[in-house]
Image (cartoon, rainbow, N blue to C red):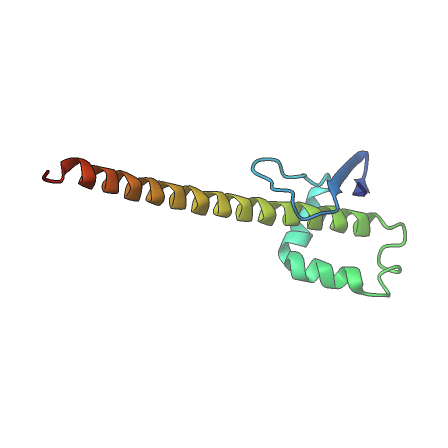
Length: 116
């Protein structure tokens, strides 16, 4: 299985290249300076993605540190949204199971208390 990796500073974040990963707890936290984090949060995911696709960002970031930090931050944001979606799906499944259990118990209760 191939893994995509992203290196920022000394930390390396890896994730499988398939969509079957469900995150309930762990979010890969980007190790980036607070000033870059606040800038990325100000512009949001769309703004950072747009900046990443520009062809002339080399003059703004000659050593590539901002680009690497932006990629790590985008990975963190993706993990957060994936975790939120995972918990939403888990809660929906739990609600469906509880409703089915309640219906089954109601049916059993009706047959048990029915006049004979």
